[in-house]
Length: 486
Ligand code: ADP
Image (cartoon, rainbow, N blue to C red; front, side, top):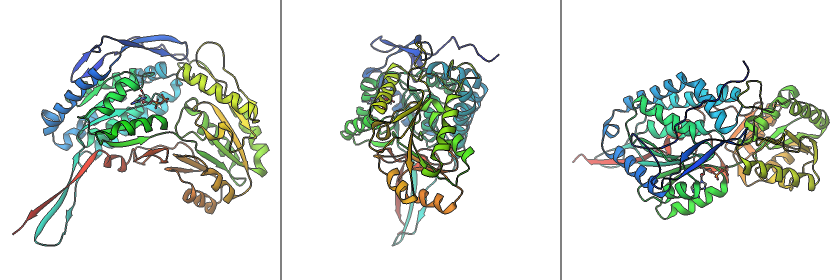
């Protein structure tokens, strides 16, 4: 059967240590099914009081108890066990993710969940391979470095890939021996809470992972300001990143950020056009356009522009918009009313500023936060739809004539998260790869993610990197030990 049943039981409480609790205030907030606008469940609404309890539990687990004494290899084994449990419950978790976030079940099953499992296994493998150096300093000394955990890590994640963002943050933090207080996004708390249940089941000791659902300016801000939190890892909007940076200054926290983007996707006339058209569609419409690295400035070389546009519009029209729990669906709803309104606002600006709307351009239906797959042509660099992150299924096509011009225009943005180039000319490909100021460049592909490959941004797109070996650095403090050998 194409449509699966929605899960009917949910974990909705705050996890502190091994206790599932109501909020100290007793408050709850609703999490909504974006396909129907109906409330799925009321979730405990944590604030500063709950964050304080969670930080105490995380500190205690960090300084005493089994986690603090555990061999690195055993920590790795627990992470591996968590990955196995997630894999064993893949169908249930995929359905829960699609229910709460609205992403098509085919994507939850084939993209989010496998990447979650892979990420945890990748970092499990690192746990016993993190070591320092011996350093031949001047004099009769023995000098070596250790890489120690940072301590209690506050992790604040967005709603676009709820489980995957949790995995990207838990994996390196746990492999290196830290403890965690996570605040999931208020729109999508359910899968993170379920993951935390599985973490306890896997045997990860109480207090190592604490989860406090709640709102950003209350629970999130309390985590950022808490004096006993050593580090904040944040993924979200760059505006929020600025607020967090200011609020973290008082306690001089370590910060890693993965923020927004306005990534150029560049199609040269000599590209394999079938692949480029498919890549342009996937690079923009995947996850309803709710990707920080979405290819939202699609630069197409003049001589293939008309043919390319015609083909990409056909593909946009053939997208199947509908119930996320139906395996035929390729595009679900946006996550909430605020995102829907923001996207429709950008579409109106695009029309008003003279871009040509070739397909879509409206809300789809009148129930759920659906947007028609939308393609704008004749977009120019200074239009709002070319400058700002829309975070929706809105493709913006810009024309270009030559390599130097497209390099200069690609970099005309505050962001620097990702870029892609489609060409059969290796020289052009590597000129672009070197010249574009972005943390990731894809050549003849898009959205290729792997737990082993670092991801993060230049400029306003972030600080530090997640994934790969680089992702571990941000969770360790190097310590230099020098001994007098007499
Ligand atoms: P979006 O607009 O995509 O929801 P945000 O940056 O607002 O992106 O949200 C990402 C995460 O940051 C969410 O978990 C949200 O609750 C949290 N957040 C929002 N504002 C703050 C804040 N002032 N301090 C800490 N966290 C925040």
